[in-house]
Image (cartoon, rainbow, N blue to C red; front, side):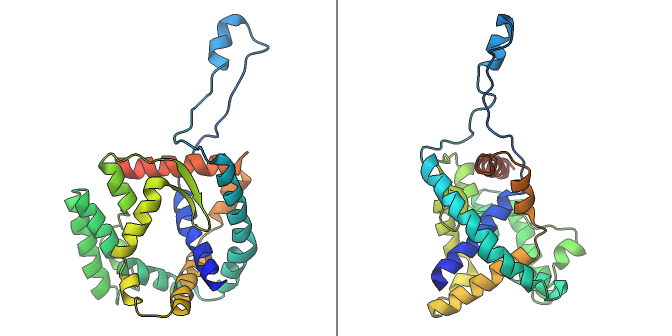
Length: 251
């Protein structure tokens, strides 16, 4: 059960990260009541899916389960956790974000984004020293050097590896075959995994669960707002995730 809770928590990293993009809902319009000259305009699909979804029935089922776990398990705990002062919760987020610098630095280097790689190295040095071990994002706050998110899924995209079919992973959320593989590779780059390699499973689960709840406690109900404003949350999240990932690869 504790292992499942850990996996559930990891859903939010992808779901909330994907939520910053906006997308159109897939639709189909017909022309039963218009003149023949307009028929071609309205008998075609407005916008084809940006990714193949041969497992849509399965994906919708997993999406439904993840949605319920989010609303009835994770988010209530995160709301309670907001009793902890915001500066303390942001400090924890900044510390572990600084600790995972190698993931971003290595992927930026693999993509030959040497300027971004240099910035990530500079951010790590600044935040580790002036930022009191990374508790303060001094590089962004005082140096105007924001974090540049890079991961192995993006690296594969830069090398023109296709996304493959769309996947909704149990507890992890929106993904693709390419990005799911990228998650595994990034795990080897993550120093948190190095530091906890000798820990017992329950200790690892506790750490990851705490980080996920902390992350959610700082979120302003992004997922809830997007779901409320969408006609079909599944299609909306699929399109927004894919457009977000395409934009990240193109940068």
